[in-house]
Image (cartoon, rainbow, N blue to C red; front, side):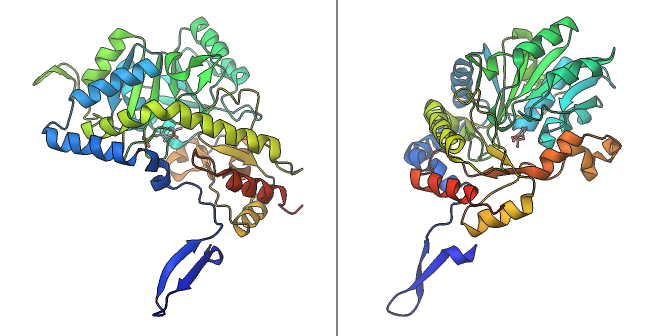
Length: 385
Ligand SMILES: *Cc1c(COP(=O)(O)O)cnc(C)c1O
């Protein structure tokens, strides 16, 4: 990357200024949080001075705001996205060995909670067009041991929740959504956090709504589940030192809740900026080998990532880097090909494997300038054939 960094010497000959002339970073958290900097600092200071750091009024007020934003009855703040999913599965108390249907194309955090609770993840190939759970593949893997369908709104796009819920209610299955990449995304006008029986969110700093550390939340419309989750995140206790369940310690802390409270009112504006950039990419990128992400629901997607596919990824990545465009790969290795999941290595999932070989994420965040967007488009369009 250093071919894009120009060092200027001052009169004393010391290198004093580095100008990053045209490298477009994939993501820069300083830049992401810059519009909220002074409000965030004030909120953090307020907590520091309050003398109350865990399970206080900052969390309560964020939970109310996030439930309201998500069009859900309840939001429960937890330690991170992985814990959000783990606590949901734990709250449902599925018997050991129960089968949970999961997409094969996802981040490992969607599947680990299933394993943690000695449940069995049943990996399903994605729809090659959307790269999301393929509803037509679900019914054939439903067995008497199936208890839930775990949908993942990967890259910020909702799964087909109508079809999934119809299937789930016919087979008496729970629907759990991993919306760690889909804050503010909708399915047919409904917020993703309001549709499944329970929805897990992550506020990892790079997500569309990001904290300054780890944080997560669960949304649900089920009052009993909400109550149980509040207990499970706090040692299984509703009354201090009275433990009714073997719970976890997974509480969103007051500082993170205060930071998220500052940023939440701007989430829709940020997502709208992401949509405009995604639309510019969808319109401007014309390279015969590049497969663009689907655009049919682009107005409803949260565009956490803009993931295109190229049959010769190393060639495409080398070109984009040479053009000053920083890219990432989400994700390079399929879960059933990971060392941690040797137990699943006998699976053959050709669609999932092809996706993992071809995907490229190009920069997409609310602070990208029109000029940078154009530079990315030109870089993609000039990938040599
Ligand atoms: C980020 C992410 C998670 C995990 O969230 P953490 O807060 O890092 O635990 C889970 N699933 C998906 C799809 C994610 O992108």
